[in-house]
Length: 386
Image (cartoon, rainbow, N blue to C red; front, side):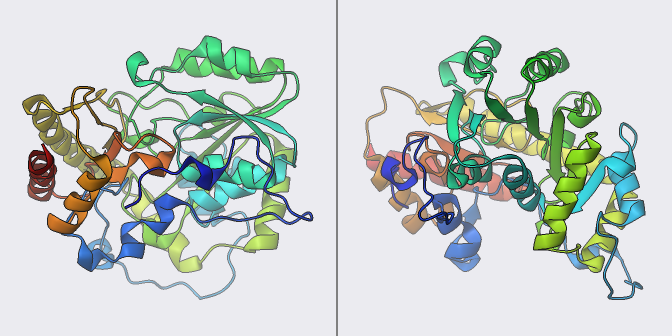
């Protein structure tokens, strides 16, 4: 894997539009993803930001749906499951994954030159799509020495009268940081006073270590919530996500965008999502137990080694350790040894426009024994280079 190259992304205010055409660029997190590299080359995969993938046979389903178009907004029963118990199903739009939902929101709301405030680091789509549109992006940066806490004063300073969108992600990827309900409501007060919109990526909402926050879109028509079946349910292969908003005009605009790009979702994908969400309580309980077990493995490893430090996550299934300041080694060589000698992969910092002394460890995807072995390989790679 290559170390971070800041020039790959360009500056935050760079306008990639050329002759009115959006310039799409592949990002390191996709180029270097396990599915792109090849799973057969990876023995211990600590890159994933999700829980273990379900097998189709685990679901015990016999699909009896006609392979037809489905409701453009999403199957009514599926929307009901997504909305319960805090939201109105009429305000739910089902999309082909959360990435599509984020793309629909950005392209429906933003044009070149618009001002956005984006939490940083972040899932790449939340940063790259506004950038590709040509927006003026200011980044609300989470800092290790502040325990990756949300700085409300800095956010208030960054929001201006011409801000169009504030984009946050909680529980946070890649740090596992979390906010309180009072902090969320303080942010909502800010966007309502402009007014502008808050986009809250809630993909890991069910995986918070405490009680989940309410669906943010249920708190104000100025809030847009996005989530999916990929991370918390281990179903990235069915490509089901959703966008929620109580703003009826905005919901119609999102629907129009979906119809022009996708028309509707796969009826098979929606059927599977329905069946899984009908047993949500049992499934989420099992997933959280798995995450809790694996987090204790990571926690024990972190406390036992002298080379890394981290801010303990408060939710999700990922964390962002970094090399301690006194650790002097060739970081690029470390990733080469880790990948090629020990066949172990983590998410290097440059995936998130961070220094490669940071890494994302996904502890929710592997089984506990695989996680322990992968962490041991990280230790061995460090020891080999010191």
